[in-house]
Image (cartoon, rainbow, N blue to C red):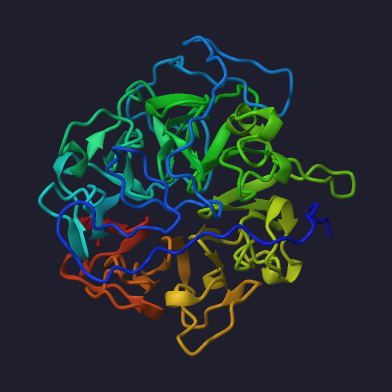
Length: 513
């Protein structure tokens, strides 16, 4: 069994949980605050889930940045493990016909079933998309505005913003736009309702992902765009280049020989899967989530500089019996990454202070580590089909959905694992939840969890302080519980996603329920 190179056991990086609110006030600023949050001066952002050191500077560190590349120029590298283009200003690809149905790349994660967007939880920064006058919802509520009449096929929640992808390849965003995560200019109040991301009019988007302060979009030609910024324990440090946030989408990955077919985001990192089965990662590396940066370079690249983190570079794996490891899927938690090989082995790396990687210890992994081979049933079904696999992760816990079953690992507080209040252990290996069957997808907020069944029932459990469990109460839920509401009666839930304080559901269209 190939195993990744591990580091000497050390004390894991500490990431504080959101503190419970003792009272509630309406309007902006009632978001939960982490004791280690980093808030930009003059920013509206009240909640930021980010890893930090024990002693935080009183203000954001001013990052010396190297001389910036001239706008409009591309940067080719001689190394084979780098993306071909990493630009400040993106050159536009050849114009695509809007709504073109024949995608030039494909992956089973590209969703096709259309639905309606519904949100609930806290929305005082606009992340619910229900308008400036509505800053919380206890039950699923439909998002209208510019989304009315659109057929949404994918829905993702960032830390405090939400992204919706339509069937014809358009991207709508709403929520906090302090650092450009929406990919469109907004004036006061416009971030509370869905709006079309600018700069993508000539391309067709087939997949989106979102982190705390960034949004990534994948085109049907295998090009990845990003907007916003990556942050670490010292504050923002850049996107494609060191420096300020990018308020509109720019190209961050474009290779004619190794095209992207899937893009996923953690809180502050992005991983790209290519058609050749390789993985490219970029962003924050402080918790080992890039899988290619040694600990000595994890803080802003060390002597190699920030560009070492921001340039998409290949995640290297040891050869197995002389054969190079190739991948078929990839997933991200807040500070973790999981990759599934074409030979059906599961690898993980990143923050592991509560055993959320599922590798049977609590040591951070800066390079890929293979999970025990017996944690998954990797045999083929009788019809020869590939098994279903989906992984999601919060701050300190992870969910694994495999062939209808849900497995959990990591921290148990507030019920996020769904194992019951009487269960005191914190599993270091994937542990099955017997109460859930026939599950097809899972999602994780910072301190809560969700699962969707094949029949379209959605379940939630974990911390309820922000109303993001959808049960109408602020109590914690220790076991998976169905979400109900008048707006989803006799409707099938297609998918779920959760951010720092809010949750979004993609619900079947009324005439298709």
